[in-house]
Length: 483
Image (tube, rainbow, N blue to C red):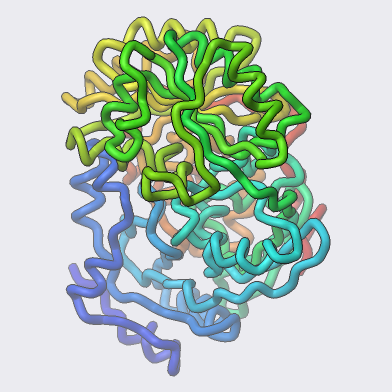
């Protein structure tokens, strides 16, 4: 039954809205249906009731108050590049387009603060002339917003050096608005930022984000080929462990994957089953070349960042973009996510390679995780059915990976973010009526969590974090959270 939006509209005043059904339907999509056949039907069926486009923070406060008073569900929206169902309105409501809030508010040595709708590339364009850039970014850097990246992302280009977004120091602060008749503006710092990070916009409207900066090196892109896949893995491990070589990207792929990536296919090497995509700081070219030679590799192609003959930045063939690029050669591909950590990361990855290598393209991203060097495995294979997908996930776990579930709408069920009583308490404090992205967080405060059916029963134990790494808060105003 269609929701009556009249009371909500009356409370919004002159905040811009879109009610045309076709425009609303288009804006109710993200990349989920394209990436996950398990979630595809649900992703296409669910549509918002309207789109709201706040122009500034005053509009955001009015939206929050109106939603609380009219009991209107809200779903926050950036560029819509997410693919875990973060941007799908499972219960309709108002889709809130935050892209007009796009100012870079300030920069200082080592840090930048921007509004949630600022695009990642636009932030770097401001900080770059001052010698800094974001430590990490999504492979969708050219269009993704900082609010969307923080709310739904977890790692990315730069994680081989800096770790994942959850790691301490990788998010410095954020401003979040509560959904109440009298909205509160809450400042989060320290570990408290992880209450909102990767929560799919379910526990407050993020209006500002403060991020640390890394040196803005002139980056050089390389394709390095190796006769054997194991040699490529060991080279990638050695490169990531070379503290003196600044790196931004280390992606390991087998020959099957390179053949799927049309832009990179000409630079593969017949007879070589391992290729490593890298971004290394330009001044360290000679040292990098020496490491390549030490492991028996060969640089088959290289270029300055974004100027390679593959016609895109090299990072657009990595992380989530790899599957998207491969789809151009073989539609119907799917991927899973496994975390491979020491002490037996390479052994575990080789087991996955031996088990799946004849049927799947191997794709491993080097990243640091919770203080450790590791690899994120995302094999590319043809989708058969949910049972086959579950079998691949179980096999990766048997190989030694910590397997997450990227085919479910639920944060808890996905396994990339631990959800506990503190998250439930913060959700209740910031969203007492359960209006923000209902059905996604998967805590008791989210009464609609049980409605998340698609993919939730796929086998996963999730990622295991060290004890003591989470926020410790009594309520939304304590220990790093202030009004």
